[in-house]
Length: 161
Image (cartoon, rainbow, N blue to C red):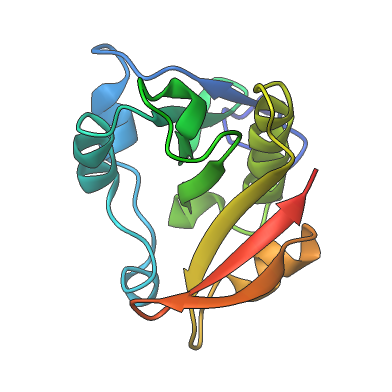
């Protein structure tokens, strides 16, 4: 943070566990109204994660300030993996106050570094909804490419690691 206490694009970005002390701050993060059709709330994401044995989730911090949330499905965390080495970036959100500061891109790069450390993982999968305000361009700039699969209105994409 700068001397004025404001988050700046130069802030150090990290992925941190969410605990009872930080949960309220993470739940208070939100995208703009026009983006809500593209990304679930953090409340919903955290609730769903607790019922998915392959879920791995973290808050995205800029210095000491929570700015976003990432949720990964890592099949290697499952007792009986269906597909060895499969990881899917299930959710990503950056609070509307902190968008266009590079935190989403840097947060995804940290997720990618984590995924590369997982056993037998050769790619990272994700998806997005089409339409104005879609995350398609964001993910393509990070190297994801469409797979041709479309499920429930979501375009699937993959990044080879």
